[in-house]
Image 1 (cartoon, rainbow, N blue to C red):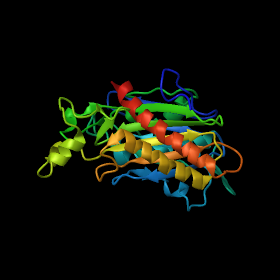
Image 2: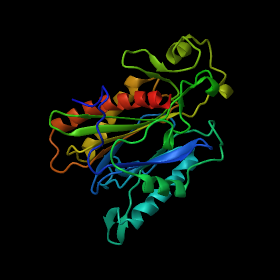
Image 3: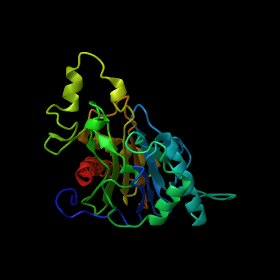
Length: 313
């Protein structure tokens, strides 16, 4: 395995493009992942308060086998409108799921709640989603406080004013078989981000105790009006390994284990955590490949979450 640690960062698999639209003044934005044609996908929804669109259609029991793009957006539920602009861009460029009446873009989307960070009336809409597609390119994506991570923060148990800045992170690794697993993470968690050594990497500012320790020691509920309740970590795993639709969902579930490694507490009622997995690989899926790629996906997901707070700082 290479690419997770050290200065050498691997690019996403060939054909994957990532683009951001950023509203620095309103402190929001959106990010789009454009995979190669005929990419398959899966999803794992773990948080208690997700904001999503078209996740059921790529679930393991649905009939659709292709994902045309994934949209990650700020703006809470309002930001889901950005996916309309992604659909428009894809239609104009002849991309989508083939139907008797033409190609229909399949664009699963998920949002983070950033309304409390900047201007609550500033939300990414269809034009923002279209612009993110126009900006998409291959190679290592821009990270930090850009796109869907522009208004992100972590460690909010003592209020938003005591939280630590976060954003978008990225990491990738290559398997012994030469296949790549990459992860793009939008980190807006209620809990802390935990480093490789198990210590708090980013949490409430000017506080020695971790969020988990603070919650455990409380005699009653926190002062809820001061606590930002809407939080989310979004991840999109990208791989060129041959995974079918069911395997993509299993890898997404394994990658959620990477979220749990790097965020504490995680998957709470105050979080809307979602992990997507996209596979552009061709060929039959064997039994071992999803295990190997899922193991890598968990590792690079944790690394991408940590990268999100490091690049934001």
